Length: 214
Image 1 (tube, rainbow, N blue to C red):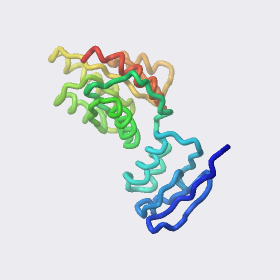
Image 2 (tube, rainbow, N blue to C red):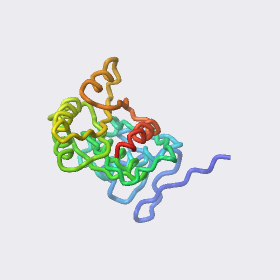
Image 3 (cartoon, rainbow, N blue to C red):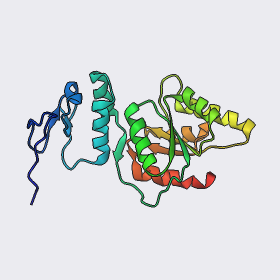
């Protein structure tokens, strides 16, 4: 038997919505009303995963411009929240080089739950600077970013590693998924390749392969 949908309430305890789908306006996001869907931007249907709930909350509370919110919501590149229970980050340092704020936060939270220490860079230039200042165990590198793309950043990191004698595993994150992309990543010096939208179980599987490089 399906459970009867429960109503939502605002901060003054006024009943707002009842049903399987609920709408909430971004302009009222700070009024205390909670919901499952974003009216003008999109609709989420039950059952809804924790990843999608997190995405919605980030959309409502942490992004200032409504028009940009809608673009970011549609651009979220996490496909599901399946996890490998055996994965343990054990304090390993991961650098996320990604320009999409929603993806940054979702990937960060997924990895932090597993015990990884996370640093975020917004583009290739910031990624190179972070790599110079901290010894990371793994780098997740988006392919398309402003100022400097992932391929260029990876080549620069590999060039600098020639002097230091180190090698950090770099995993490409790409939304293109076109023939030849993997070869381009490997030629630039990347170690592995994940297509967007990211399957989190696949992400954990690939990351855990490089645990021994710590």
